[in-house]
Length: 584
Image 1 (tube, rainbow, N blue to C red):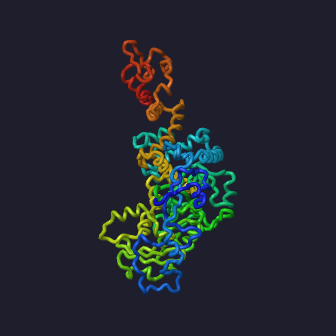
Image 2 (cartoon, one colour):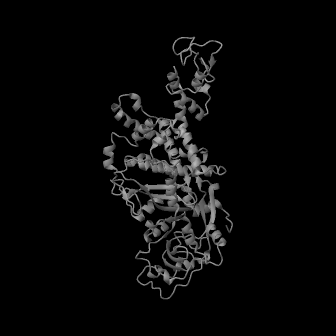
């Protein structure tokens, strides 16, 4: 940063008033950087000094269009002013997120106790409706927060091994040895299916009436709570990306959309605002057209972009837009709200001059530029990906450190790309990366209930955000995402497994292995009774019933009970009561 800032407090008060609205921001959390930015009193762009632009050919005709090859007059007047110092707050965790040190604590920032309590309450309401269909009360016992967390933990474990869409019974297989011990020791497969079928996010009694007033009513309370936590616990960096996320679903839903060029032709569409430095989802919105008032929102590109970037408007952020959001109106309106944008324009756009759409008129690695008020249109031809047409309100004179380093390392024999093109290529696939991360360790199960599918996507995004918070709080850990998810899932299921260990009806084999899984000594969960004969005679083996002499009797190393020979001692030690009954 060039120059010296003499009075920080006065500068912040005059030129960075938006910082005073955030109560979490302190003086030591503000970074000052030199940039070339337009303010409300300075319209137009500053000169494009860092990129060599080819002279515009005379045959280019801008007549009948809104574009011009000359910069606005206000730009030349402000070119001698140099850079302006803009306050940028330090990005990172906020509030309670700074104190989260374990994987489960990071996840509970987003799937907080209120979310779990809401799910537990409405799930129990659903269980009460179906209790009359079961002959035994224990088959439809109510659930609690501990069991709900265990079910979610099993879903995360299933996602880490790529069995999200496969039959869950293979994870609970304890007879052939192909299942996961942490899963079938925590609960039975029948109980898991029962809780997952009963999982609800709204009151089932009033669900039909609420659905007539809001299409998203079955999950709106949980959905808005989790999205609000995305805002609450993280301050984004300067570069963000806005694009669409697709999620496949074949069930019945009023706001299901068609997804072209895919094997699964239908599903849900989400709008995501993602941090480009780390894969943190700052904001999300589900596409629900033709909803009822007051939830009937406009999904025009301009309205969606303004809604999604509302939390970062006025803070001089740079947003890389997806192809569906790049219009002249979007770029201009966001620029008026002190938010810079960059995105690739579709070649079929009628407002683009014809010369910008034809790559044959360009030389390799050449650039054409046109201007309209605060918007810049750039057409660049590169050997790698051909013609690229960008529309941006980002100042061309801005120095980007990462882009500058990339250009210095590039081959001198090849003409370097403009910094705007390099920056766009670097950040354009951030949302697609998020979608790939969700698909890699997907917790989704095959279901026809659309609220449950939306909750699965919220779980995937929450786990990614939790991993980002964990890496920021503990940068020395360097844990990969799969190990993080496994450790997080184990922390979620251990409380329920510890409670199951105290059950008196649990088979001894399961109890012994469960104690080893939890790292609990047998003395802590098993009270050894006074050795007695199971058949009522003190002079006989309690397993086979044969008489035993004091000279030949043996005792089990595990429970201390007396047996008649080594064979019965082995059976007692391995807790194989079925084999012992067959022997007797």
